[in-house]
View (spheres, rainbow, N blue to C red):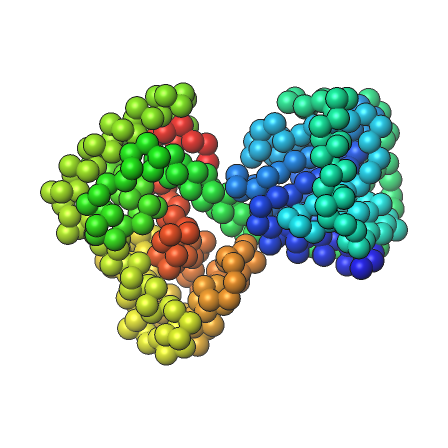
Length: 385
């Protein structure tokens, strides 16, 4: 297939939004982060994505804000090869070979072309040959390109006529992509926790998923031990100190759970309820009373107390048919994406926090509850989110 004008950016962006395991980028010029996010979206921020970038830092450039964002989410992901001119974009098992650099100018103001009619194995092998080339260098700090005029020419300084608009990337989409990136870091921590502790057998017996057990740990640190309560930033931890703290507080929560087993198992009940009421067959007949039952599981709605009127306002301001439609579209039709979350947030009195809880209760094996408590819990163990 040959792509040009708006189909070039839209097709590339669609694959990036639906990425499963890797995004590999090879281009000598990379523009500012605002344009880059419009072109590739934000799914690359997840730490379960194999994210690699080959640039030419000596005669090409990468804008500093983009460099900082790439390195913050994926340290050691950028390498430089002098004289690089190829533009290759590999997303999972799809590859776009194009004339376009990763800049807003290239994808919206220049007559560029691209094709995915290539052999993915050959392109992967070529990318790896560049990545492993003895002349390719790891880039760990940003350096300004030698020629400012080149940046102006390649990334927007020259007054090109606009040929097409870049794909939409809103503040709401960025917030959701950050949420999904945080989830991936939570998942990585949960795997470490499981490897070190072997899980709490009482919680396993009661039907807790791994994420629900970690959520219990974070809740304990915040509300019982009050260890993470006042945190405002990440704590510096070595792997050994993190492992020590995991063992220490695993022992404490195991004992605590024995004493408060009934209240702790509410997580399992909530997940079972939400899964039942929002399943593909059940969602189409859900009642207002059952919608309220789902909302009452949300921490951000006051856990059934409706302390700020959120649940009541949500029900008053949205029709039952709209609730059915948006919840069904989000939960029962493929993977969770930033676009689907944003669509669901169009319901009145519905925030990204409540949508993330809906997702976590429905899919407790796949998505953790990401809130202030879990964020501070990760900070306590030295995980940046």
